[in-house]
Length: 156
Length: 156
Length: 156
Image (cartoon, rainbow over all chains, first blue to last red):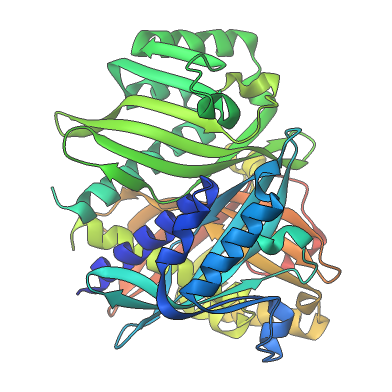
């Protein structure tokens, strides 16, 4: 798999991932991860200090599915709308798992029409070819701001 | 035409389209469409409800040219400056016309230097190879917010 | 070098450049330029009027390194965090140096967690293959707003 192909496959993975969230098909979101995986949301400050804790942590696809079920019950998501704008990935290593870093921005639109910058940050990814489909072995979402909205409950 | 090539041609179409608007060469904008085409601007809410009406509707390149002429007469556009940031396209179908969806963001800069998030949304496109040049058979601009600025008169 | 390859190499250059700034590895920033180069920051308004002056001007890699040293001494940078979101490049000419234009957005996150749109604009680039590595012969950063923050001292 050449560099160009890897880059485009990663870009396609990122846009499919974002589109799944932005079109509110959250039940499909866990499928972007391997069964055993890491999904973590943290702040740039925590990440710099090497603190692994983060504000969201899951280590299996099942835990991700649970999060979505909880979110649906809480009925939080539908009050607003999210829009991911995702840059092109920087591939840092492609010898085994693909290691990549990608900047992103999420704009939130509230019911009354107001928009704001919700999150800016970087995805730090470890991606594996799982029988022809790229999936995340690990996705660490590093948010530039450490002032988290309670609503960061939604997948980033 | 391979997947990678299609993706890059679509990306190039999107950047050329955005650049034409952002550099105020609006007279060239209708050329991105087939002579018989659909250009429609609507809100996510209307789109979800299946309402086709939208707030802007044109079904030919000539109508698009008329819009630009009207806009120039109204002399609205020059008071501010727009900047499109366009994500990579998700190709949904490439068997006949290319069907794709692409997230975008428009930042507006006013004369006094203030910037705001003007529009966030998605392009829902049907694109055709028109003698070696990709053009829009249909571009539906779905805006996340339903609170439209009157100035949405400019092409998105 | 085919069109697709050029486009992806440029995109990779842009993401690497942005990542160097956003991860505060500013000392590596001058390496993205040829030893004799132009780096210029200007406003859209000045650019339209053909005024070359700009608010930042450097014509060698050494001058860029000096800027970073000065910035580190002034200790300004660490108080906030920047996030570049960079679109795909439009290649305008690839016969000799690659001439390209690319839209970008910078979101700034302040220490207290507030985020704002810091800069929106376009990179007007002349890029050369320097022994297998793409470097900027010229990067003109055209900012949509002419109201510059004093902190535009950081590389864009």
